[in-house]
Length: 119
Figure 1 (cartoon, rainbow, N blue to C red):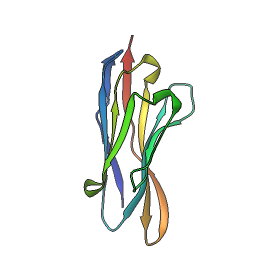
Figure 2: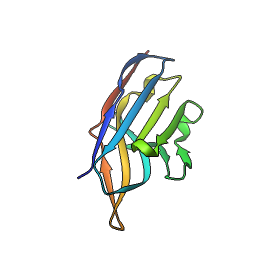
Figure 3: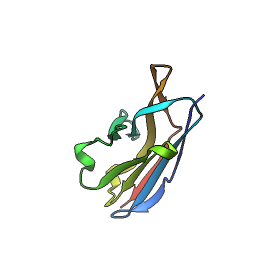
Figure 4: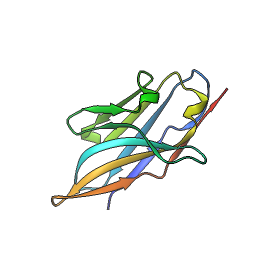
């Protein structure tokens, strides 16, 4: 069984920074892509950033230049460095991982971590 455990959310003022972490626990698997999504109240969940096993990245236009996604494959951990935060970044942030067990892919989600940016 795989679990994604997130940490690093919190309350920050406009212009501040936060760093989110997400570690995948378990054994016997490999990880393809890892990413971060967010969901604000009354809105649909949206992609924030994603990183492949080879290190290729993709970002939502709204966070380009402010957020940086990275991963440590040895630790099965993905990070999201968020700088120049804005009130519109306020949301619950969810970690996502596409994991391979015995040649089959499965998608896992973390429990979510709240990020609140005050104006």
